[in-house]
Length: 243
Ligand code: IPE
Ligand code: IPE
Ligand code: MG
Image (cartoon, rainbow, N blue to C red):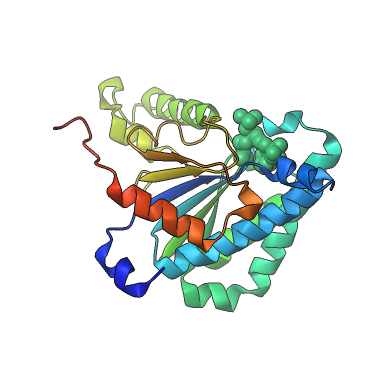
């Protein structure tokens, strides 16, 4: 993005990405779906780096939903291996991440992932936890409904333990039990891939998000596409119920 233009814009504080269209990208090229995921992982790296360069406070990437387990085992395995690759690389690049101030956080239910993958995620989170320029949330085995159920259970436990009254449950206290606690709600959610739906992504947090649905398939998403999305976002008139 041109530095002069960038200076004039009020950037979104938090951007969500629904990384869709990997399979169709591969299909168009007569490749295996796993090749599409590989290309999608490259797009993820590129946009991650670019968002931190722009100084965006938080970015959330929807990488694997609670519903994606329905896919063939071979495809699920290929996606899980890409997470391994990314996390191992992030560890090797920890100096670079340090410099860029990137903090990587896992959002979703880790408990059913392979133990080595859980350990990799934990190590990576710990290693980057002190950085605070850009938070990168990686949503894996993530579902918005499951996240709300988890928050409800945690609050119910607090009520049962006498720590809070039922009346003490507020929008704020629910937000604080979500994976994204402490982060601003997403201002902008971008879904490439041509589908106009949310597919269980950040359903609580997106109450007042601006949505951008584009035809570009995720592996074809470049820095310039994020520039365009940000410029479009800046043109929107957010009223939050006011006039
Ligand atoms: C998104 O791409 C990646 C995941 C959901 C893991 P898809 O694999 O859904 O790609 P399409 O929608 O089939 O093209
Ligand atoms: C949404 O993509 C989930 C992720 C990008 C991880 P899907 O391809 O799973 O969504 P649907 O099935 O088209 O709604
Ligand atoms: Mg899809």
